Image 1: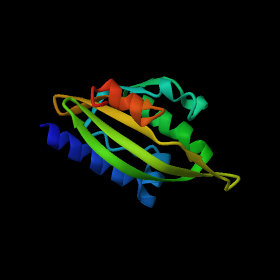
Image 2: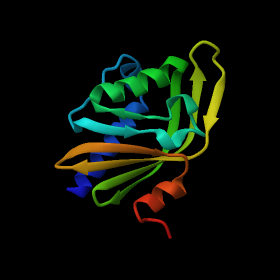
Image 3: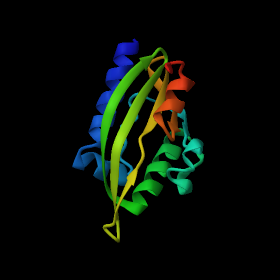
Image 4: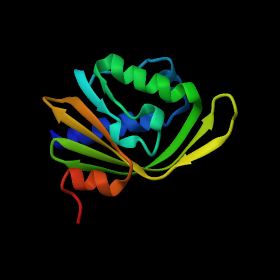
Length: 145
């Protein structure tokens, strides 16, 4: 099942990178097929990255709220997936080279490398945690060296 979870996360992350993916996110059109209705979306550790979003969001509506707030400020986002790692029930996504363009200013800003950890139970994502750097995320799932 873990390999399948890796592919689910990889496909979802790649979909966000497309122009249509950002537009769908901004309209709140999210595919919750693999997302538990009671998901915990934990952005509380991202205070140094995006202080306005550093909070914990609950359920499908909470995830929509997170993305709506993020995309109120940015019209476009580009990033690279450095790696997607299998850590059992957790799938780690290492993101780098993220840039975003201001919705009203067109100013480009960049984020340092960060990571997402998706936790699966019974084929559904029950938690997403955002980490301000790769090392913290890898340590959280026991993949640090």
